[in-house]
Each structure stands twice: as structure tokens, then as C-alpha cells.
Length: 425
Image (cartoon, rainbow, N blue to C red; front, side):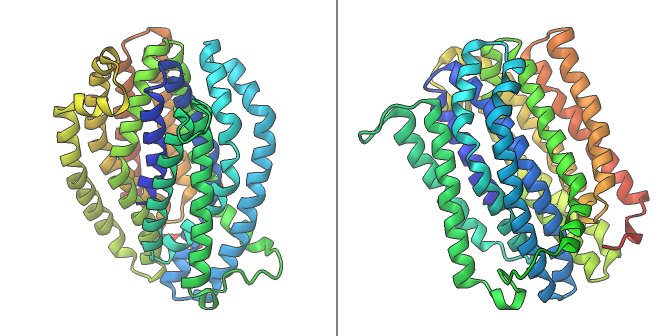
């Protein structure tokens, strides 16, 4: 449900902007993926905290969870301040050299000028999320997800199109509404934590001093996750930059494909997050022999869950294309990409569960190496099919099969043969 909320922002922004224009639709893809790449630095740090919290929870060492949470919260907030300051000058500089169309550039900057304020709230919220996933009490994430989705849809409707006396802001309205949704959600999670969580048991908010040792321990686990996530999403950003050089229509098609693809990923992504923390819990409870059978079961469940989604999207692509646009030409052009992402989601369902199992063992350096090797082949394929020997947009999108097949195979090979059973954290 948390992943649904994050992606409801993506889907609603794309669906509303698809009715504003193709330039805005394409610009929101570039701006959205750029924001997400930077956000994943903070999210990656929270994953290190989540692994440690999960391990202490498995050991029933609850009093050690608070110091992890408290120091992670402070670190991620300070990190968001630093990244925001860099983004103020860095975003226009990067986009100036990355985007070829002046219209797409202007629209992207208009979106990101507002969207980057979300870093403050998203980075802090990521630590609360790591706490609740780490202690395996995720019900709060469901209600916060629903709240985020409703808030974003409401303000998208009001600000993009200018309803209820508000000015028509277009793509700027999409950026503002996303930030508002993140603010409202963080306020709710903080209030819930004070009222409902056992703050004394875990030692939450009992912040006496910065524990550098704890921060460094989290960083030791998370630094490679942070690089891994940043490089991974940055590569996706490069994907859209390459597509943008093919023209505004291919970029608009790819944003619709991305939006639907990320939505289809939600069941497998949720299970993969669960695998990450439960693998850590199993190892903490000294049940290492159960790890690989558990990952196998979860990969199978993940595949079965996404199979009906694949059938729906593959055989009824027109219905899903219509969610994003009323333009019949754009709808028709989207259909091949929609069919490709629906099939790619089956490979993703297996591979992402396996890969999160690797991260859950605590050997994040190996996970980073696997990711880096895979991304090399992925971006090489994209660059060749989009720039060196320009093909149709659907041929470029076949890169998803390259990525997920490689990362799943390498991850499973490590789980079978690797040294993760000897690692202590």
C-alpha cells in the first residue's frame, strides 16, 4: 500500500498531464525520474536502517532499535537539506545539457522548481517507513498510503486545471500537489507514532547525542544500497534522456509506459521489501538454513500475483492507454510498449524478490556489484537502440528483459554459492 501511494502520485500526475499536452507529459517523465533518483539516496540510507532494525527485532533486542531510528532520522533530514541546496543550482545545469527540446526543458524546470521541496518530507518519511517495516508492523503504512493518494489526486485536480477558484498551473500544479501530499502524510505518520507506537519499548525520540558509531554502522550497510539505487534510477533517467532525443511523441509514449509499468510492479515490489526485512529477521533468529527456501516461495508467490495483471494489460492495452490520454494517435502508439511492460513484469516479479534477498543478507556490497554489472549491459543496449542505431520505441523498451534477466540470474547464483552465511552485522 505504501508503494501504491508513491505510485498513485506518479499515475495521477501522468494521467492529468496527459490531458494538458504531450510536452508536459514528457517533461513530467524526465522530472519525475530525476526526483526519484535523488530520493533513492535517502531511501537507500533508510534501507540500511531497516536491515539493522529487522536484525535487532529478530534478536528481540528492542531497546537498540531506538538509537538506530533516532540517528537515522537526523542523518536523513540533514541529507535532505544538503541535497535540496545542491538541487537549487544543480537542476537547471543538468537539464540544460541533458534535454534537447527547449519546450521540454522549460516544462521540466517548472515541475522540479516545486517538486524538490518534497525531499525534506520524503527523506524523513522513509525512516519512519524503515522502522515499521523493520518491526513487521506495516498497517500504518496502508492508511498513510491511502491518505497520500487522496491528497495528491485532490490537489492535482485543483491545481493542474485550476478548479475552485485556483489558477490553472499545469505542470507546476503537479509538482506542488505532490509536495503537499508528502507533507500531509508525514504529519499523519508522526502523530500516529506518538499516539500508537510503543515509543518507550523501542526508545524512539529519546535523542541525547549523535551516536557516530550507529550512523557509521547504518552507512556501512546502506552506502552501497544508496549508490546502487541512485545509479539504478539515474540509468533510468538516462533512458528517458535518450528517448527524448528521439522526439516528443516517443517521450510521451515512454512516460505512459513507465507509469503503467511502475504500477504493475507494486505487488512484486511489496513482496520484495518483505523479503528484505524477513531475511534479516531469519538470520537474526539464527535460522539461516530457511533463507533460500523462503526466497524461492516468495518468488513463486510474486509470479502468481502478477500473472493476472499481465493478462489484463496484455490483452486489453487500449483500456489502460485511455487512462492516460484521450488522443487516439497517442493511445494507438502506446499499445506495443504496454504489451512489452506487461510481459517484462513477470521477469521482474521473480528477479526483484531474489535481488532483495541478497540485500537482506546484509551483503550490500555484493548487491551493488551485481547492480552495476547489470546496468552496464542495460544502458549499452538502450544507447545502441536509441542513439547509435535508432529503432522504434518498443525495441528500446525491450531493455527491461535484459536488465531483469541478468540481475535475477546473478542474484540467485550468489545466494546459492556466496559467502553471505558467514557475514555478521
